[in-house]
Length: 286
Image 1 (cartoon, rainbow, N blue to C red):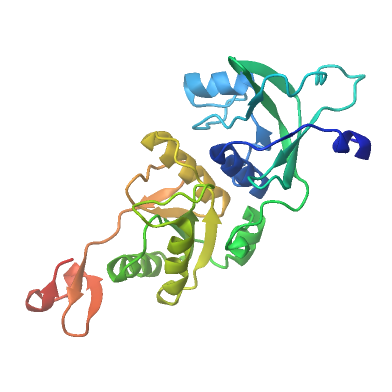
Image 2 (image 1 turned 180 degrees about the horizontal axis):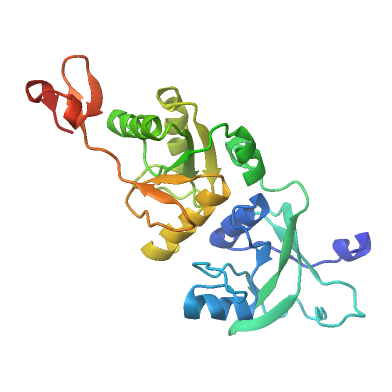
C-alpha cells in the first residue's frame, strides 16, 4: 500500500495529448490486456514483431515519457524503498490517475520512459459529453444482442450513411455501437471539431436502431495501418463483433469486417435503399 504522505509528495506530470488519450483508454479497459504504460521489453517486442513480450499481438507501443530529473530519488527496483508513484494530471492540472512505477529508462536526451500500471485518482478529466466517455464494462452492460455492429464516425452521418448502417444492422440482426473518436485534444478533422461531431451524431441517433454511442479518445499516430489495427482492438474491447468498413478500417482483434452495400436514392418516397431494390427509372445515385 502507498501511504497518503507518499501520494502527497509524489511528482506530478501532464502528458502529451496522445499520452492522455492513451491513459483514458487504459483506465476505461479499452486497451485490454494492457493495464498501464509499457516497459522497454514490451516496446522492443512490439517494434520488432507487433507482439507483447508475452507473445500476444499488439499493434503500437503505449508509452509515457517525462523529463529527465523529475524522478530523481525514486528507485522502483529497491524493494526496501517506498513504492514509486507518478501523479498524472490533465491539461488544467487536475489529478486524473496515478502510475505505480515499475521501470524507467532513457528514451532520448533529456527524457525518460516510465512504465507501470495506472489507476484512477482524483477528480480531473472532466470534458464535454462526459456521459458518453464510458468504460468497457458500462458499454457491454448496455448491449442486448449477441452480434454488435461497430461504426467509427469521424465525420457527420448524412442520410446515405445512416441508411447503410441501418441496413447492415438489419442484415446482421445486430445492435449498433457508434464509436466517436475525439483524439483527446479537441483538434478539428476536416474542419469539424469533436464537440460538433458528437452533436451531429446525437442529432441523428433516432435514425439508427437502438444505438449505443461512445466517445473514444483515439489519437491519430500518423500510421494508417497501426491506427486501424488499434481501432479494431478498442472496438473489440467495447463488445463489437463486426465492424462496418470505412476508410482506414483494417481487420484485427478477431472482428469481422462488413463492406457497406451500395445504396441508391428512391425518388418514389425519398428513402435510401439497397441499389437492387430500387427500379432503375426511380434511381438516383449518391
